[in-house]
Image (cartoon, rainbow, N blue to C red):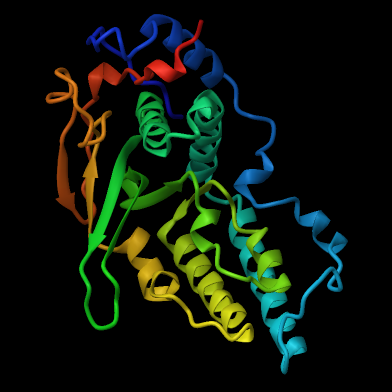
Length: 287
């Protein structure tokens, strides 16, 4: 069982944090009982509603091989659904439950993705998880365009397993002029992703191939930032892990000692940051 880590009274500037005691009370109350069911944004839309969509609702999927294109996308949906609905990993289920609660707590920060991500990371650490902000960065090479990306990862040391938490996962697969069948597939891609590297690899392969077919059917080229290799590097490339509550670009006299980062492949941090307390920016204050 995962228990909340005891927090300390380490202070943060009052201009950036609402009452820590009040915040902790709310969080502890939310942690006491597991959710009854996950919301649709963890699994795309309700899978039982898939048949409600009419293939004649507009546009043409493939000028020459429409039926083959449709078959490929339906096959992709059938392959993605079992990955997202797999409930055998108890640790992943518990992690997803806490991510859901964190998303609810910090829903008012959706317009500030960086702050939202860091608050969710701090929340997970408060629950006892070895969570951190993970930053991938890679250079151009052999047709691969340079890029960088940021998400949350959680390390489970005893099993050497790495879990990925992406709070805006589905948007990374949006393309120009998608076919109806690709739009249907994208509805199954979760907005909030919680899973292992194996889950991620399978989804990336399926959706990247579908994006290529969709663009090709419309006479469009696959952009470099939607190629399978580029997408793999977003989550699976060389990365740097940090538990800083503030982004590096944030300027505050109290941020210099609030965390640390290190380049790694699979290294964890056990130290509590800020005494395990959460960061509440001024825009998220309770009144």
